[in-house]
Amino acid sequence: MEIVESTFYALIASFAFMIVFEVRGKALLAGSIGGAISQLSFMLFQLPDYLPYLLPYFFSSIVLTLYSEIMARVLKKPATVFLIGALFPLVPGRGIYESMVYFVDGQQSLFFAKLQETLAITMTLAMGIMMVSVIFRNFNLRSYFKKGQV
Image (cartoon, rainbow, N blue to C red; front, top):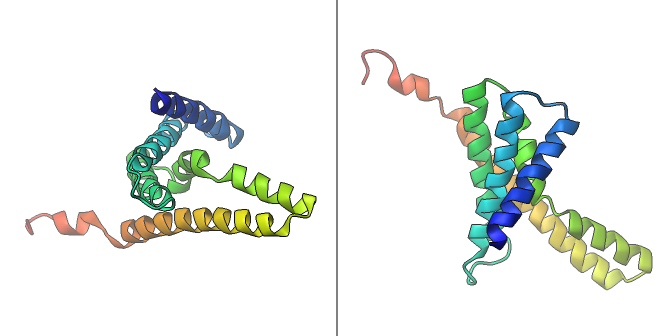
């Protein structure tokens, strides 16, 4: 039940976040669904206990980038429109907040530990996004299905 509830909240949060960026129409709905998909994939990848804590972020970023690239081609919009909405539930906002609280309180060891964890999550998300985006940019399906070649 927690997975369904979390996915629903991610859908609503992504919807509201995309309204702030003035996304309209089908792109608003598709981006919101992307946020739900990213949260659902993150929760499902967290279920196995043997995975390190960064792997669910990495796999979820791959899933959300695949979704964003596909929706960009279907709806003929830039992929970043869908990527921003889908990425919103995975951004480590709590880690950023906690690291700043530790910094203000003067707890340097806790600050650096939390900052390191937050930066690791952020870099993991960026690696997954970059990996899929590079593959999509360099891989042109139309060239493989030209008339007379297949």
